[in-house]
Amino acid sequence: MDGTKILKAIDHTLLKADASWEGIKKLCDEAVKYKTASVCIPPCYIKKVHDCYKDDLTICTVIGFPLGYSVTQAKVLEARKAIEDGAKEIDTVINLTDVKNGDFDAVENELAAIREATKGYILKVIIETCYLTEAEKIKMCEIVTKVGADYIKTSTGFGTAGAVLEDITLFKEHIGPDVKIKAAGGIRTVEDAEKMMEAGADRIGSSAVAPILGKELC
Image 1 (cartoon, rainbow, N blue to C red):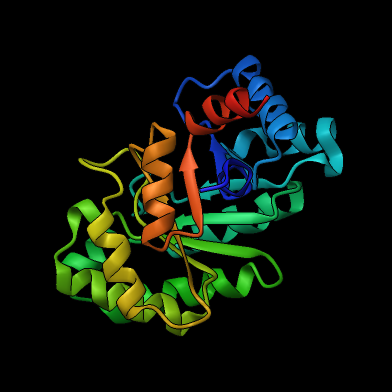
Image 2: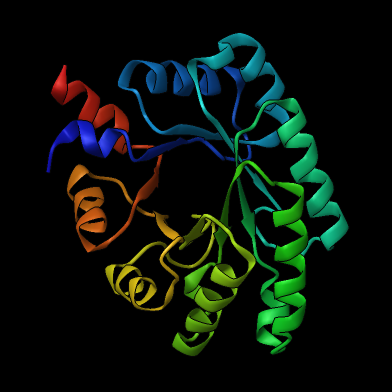
């Protein structure tokens, strides 16, 4: 696969709890240099990055991250503030407790509220596949499609496992035609990214792939 195509699909990511401004700036400089799809950064850095890089970067951020069980009103406020500060893409974590309790109406209502708050912006829904049964994953494909989200995303990278090819294949079978796939969590090599994209992923969340591939191309 063309390396440039992979770079254009990468959300270059730094979401560590101790992420410093030095680390965030390095990430952003790499994203500009290698022309990645976006940088995925903690909400507290959005405004500073936007002020420093203006339109040179597409900023992605996370809400309800990483556990997903914030109340809906908090997630909606997070999303609105992120957009106000300069984010163009929002990755939100579902409430896994609702899924495990079988309360899929609550899951759908929450995602619908977040979709309403992010109209005109990219919304990616993290379902954290490592904690879900196959039936729950399929149900989430249906809900993500129904609420009109732009992407279904495998993982936060903070769970017990990350993206696996079988889940990308499952998503492809059950999402609607307007929903894309983001694979994230444990994607550390160019080969990993390539396999995910060949299986059907449209975006790759990774902290490692862009620098490796960018240096190879340069």
